[in-house]
Amino acid sequence: MANRQLQEPTRLVLTALADAPRHGYAIVQEVLAISGGRTKLLTGTLYTALDRLLQQGLIRIDQEEVVAGRLRRTFALTEDGRGALAEETERLRAGVVEAERRLALGGLRPAADGRAGRRAARPGGPRIGLARIGLTGGAA
Image (cartoon, rainbow, N blue to C red):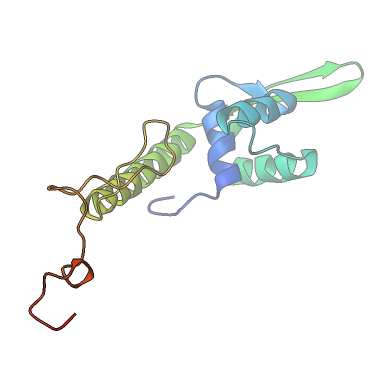
């Protein structure tokens, strides 16, 4: 999976499984929490993603049990899945570092809460055009 960007739902599912094996409903709840409520995986989307991740060897079935007459699978991250998530985390981190660097060069400070920040104050206060206040050599 080297250098292959993960789609957000895939990254969120892998993140949900990074600390413990989980069954489908628990994965949906974890993704909702991880994304701050922005991403709610539909059942069809989740199980399509889980099937694909199983085929790619990024997750495995940790346990199968019958609950209320239905098969419930618990999924776990594999070492390959852990590696893919680590690579994606590093790729995202590098992108954030570069964005922050460029924002700083443009005089925009990132806000502490992660939202867009304010322009940094210019040394010496705001600049006012000299022509605007009548201090140029030309006729006013």
